[in-house]
Length: 532
Ligand SMILES: [Zn+2]
Image (cartoon, rainbow, N blue to C red):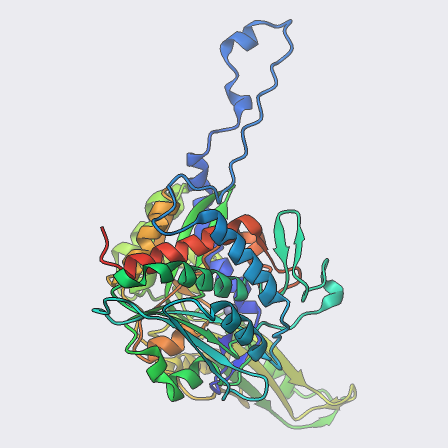
């Protein structure tokens, strides 16, 4: 994942990863208890009366419960899918992809494109195109599996080939060497996004022998430059090579989450929309002077007062279709009666008009993770000012990174920030253009239903909900191009592993790889075949 810079470029960003994952955490804070209901309670509380009635007998040691892997499946493998083989292929391919250094900058995605092209060469029904117009060493790749009965428009699967950079000295293993350790595969890109790329490729290859019965083409798009730009990835393909994507009806991309809580899969959050990223520059100007004569009009002091107030300010609370559905799904299973009531009150009314709904929403917003779902948020990220310790400087600047709800008006948000900041000589301005948010991708499409169904089959106790990510992905460009897009990282992960995305010691549980490939296979199969 990366975020879109206001100038239209992608910049590296990991705060949003924490936030994106954190928004889920908020949900799963709730689900933590919900899942707990599915788990047997600790045995120590349930010793049989006979044991307590026999004081001389040593207390029986409860038998350790058989550890069940969260990736273990009860459902049989789908037709045409060899579970063991696919798991092995996904692991092998991911190891090969990690071994290709595609840290961006500079990217060098051509290395991964060649690796993929070699794997796909000779797969009957698959046509591979490597696009080398993305710059020196860079590439995008399109692999198209032709359906035998193409009655419907193609389905796209997207994954990016580049990764963020590494600080090798902070890793336990060499980050660019795929390393198996304690049941995990370590390496840069393992979960962002080479894992998805490997799983999608394996799913495509597994579908190929069934192409005669498929009703739509399945197109894998492997992109460059998602992490940190420039716009030579999905944008370039959409602008210059749209024909290779056919008239795709919808797309699957990274961005959503499958969360393991307490050893079981608790939730599948399918990203249908995302917040928009902006930067707001705050500039303070005042008289310069000698530090020996304190000046109440000190520009830095005014800047500090203004940014402190704006930091504590809350933009108006606002629900959209996606966050309503998301919170509505969580509400009945929240174990905290107070929060359950607050969610019910919030969802029953319009927080703009209904004081009960507004009060409930404000209480819920005390959880900073829920707060990031409920409103546009602003984080103070940069402060610059001063030239030396005995000079009152005439100017200082600060930057707020703003994540706007898709239907919020950023111009109004900036005006409100300026009013709240309200210091003489301090002004607030939006850097870069105003983005038009593409519509959220609907939950009524065949692809969304296929994602839901595959989730219900593979993780029958998990909640499956539409989700607005607080971070940004290539999905925004696809939605803007009129292609409804659903985000999912197909590997069930515990929060602790998910938070390593963009960080040190990125890893994926080896047992999750086959699960991810099967999830994509089931989804693509359901959406591109006549069905039962
Ligand atoms: Zn990513």
